[in-house]
Image 1 (cartoon, one colour):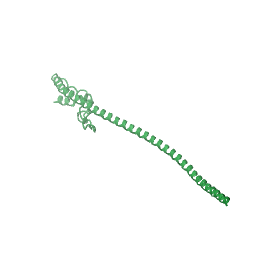
Image 2 (cartoon, rainbow, N blue to C red; image 1 turned 90 degrees about the vertical axis):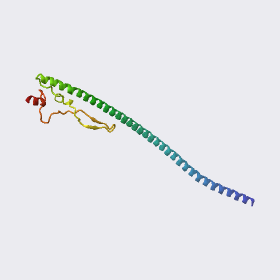
Image 3 (cartoon, rainbow, N blue to C red; image 1 turned 180 degrees about the vertical axis):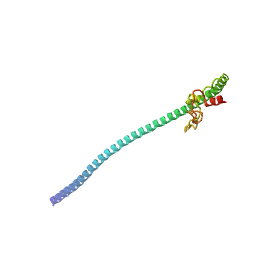
Image 4 (tube, rainbow, N blue to C red; image 1 turned 135 degrees about the horizontal axis):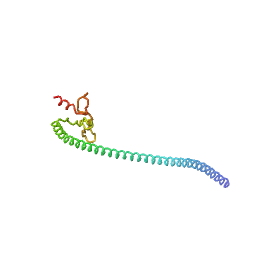
Length: 176
């Protein structure tokens, strides 16, 4: 009986070893599957991080592009302001010269008339560009200033022919 008992104990041990081995094989298979899933997830995570790095680089490129655009806008605003200031200075200088020219011309014309000579042609008859009329009313959205430009339009009425010998005013004075 002792032999039988020993054999039964050995059979029980073999049965337990078999059950534990099967259980171990199942766990080993699950471990292998989990390890493969872990490697796959690590690869995905690496890909996600690379994509995130690319997106961040693209974002920084766009941020830099926007910064450059803002810098260009600031340069253009400053250029426009400077150009407006230069235009105002030139216009004011032109007006002063015109105001200086007008009485001098009137005086020369009066002297010429006393000698029986014709008046000199007006500026607008000599060069259409020299007429001081507002060409267009420019409103600057940057400075809020209203600028006037030189306007190329003769001061005589429409349909009046230009004469190299004098203005319409000279012909009216000569006839009286």
